[in-house]
Image (cartoon, rainbow, N blue to C red; front, side, top):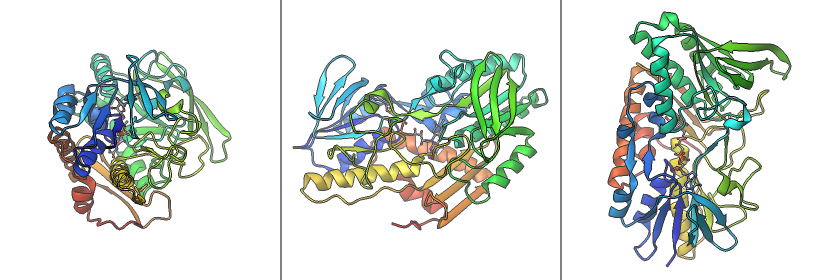
Length: 425
Ligand code: FAD
């Protein structure tokens, strides 16, 4: 018997639990431990922030669905991991032992790195969690009574840029629909060296296409933006050139702002001796296995991936759905092999595929592999992406409710995009 604990119940953790259950016999107990009692479909949060979705449409209570599949569930935050004695400590003081630990804790949102930012005690909003997106929507409703300038973008050290573009275009479409777009100057403020960089060094023609879309939608931009602080209604940012020299200091006014923060690893994970890099992301080998603790595996935003390139203002590489799906599948194969006394050799991919909604249309990109030069470097725009994103949302939520272990990207999305595992595997 091997006891397996999955920490985190997001896009990485829930599929990991279902795939493990489908792969391993019932003699191996699987328990999910997560800070919230529910799964939230994070990619829908930009829609929540403009009222196109409400919480109950994108959130699933986990207990009944996991129980139905014979998976234990503990809705508690992990406060400490004792990797040296194979135990985790929970917020209520209880302790759970494990034989294998799968860490899928996602990001800690590092708002503290830019004073005045964030929705808790700052002046900018976030769409990173459903709670934040709901708060952003409440502020957006007030803003609509008295519209003014808007800032959307990403802070220094951010890695997840797709949702910032999405939100800028979704907001633009919503304001046009309400016929008040003429009262709202929008500025996109980003740590990326150029529009369309996406933390990936660009994908295909993403630079010229996204610049052109911004021009067509009257969205101005400041890139290489080293945002240093935010005050009520004012964001302070230093624009750098390609060599890191100061080009201009900006004080950008806003009535509503949504800035994605830099990510770090969550405290319980970051605090484990030898497990993580200095920002608290789990250091793994090519088999998703901790370099130091051989019975700990990790998937999702919490793993350490180096930036694609050095940029004047720091940026990271995004970790998106397809990458996370392949990480999860590799972990399941490798734990199963380990239990059977075989050498687990399954690998995830660091390929990026993303469907980004743009309100009434959308943009999709595929970067295989993530690091240029690539075998596939593909960026397209069309209404079909908007529809594909809705289908992705519906299907993923169905998968969580049904306890399905089938990999969505492998089975549907790659094929829909006409890509049949072209990558290097
Ligand atoms: P999460 O989904 O964040 O899950 C982390 C889990 O860990 C949560 O259940 C949390 O409660 C739990 N947890 C955290 N700390 C603890 C603790 N101490 N103890 C117990 N549990 C803990 N990618 C795409 O491919 N397509 C998209 O369209 C897309 N849109 C995105 C939109 C937004 C706004 C953001 C922020 C990201 C988006 N991404 C998208 C990127 C990525 O797919 C998501 O961030 C995804 O949610 C990452 O999954 P995860 O499982 O790693 O982390």
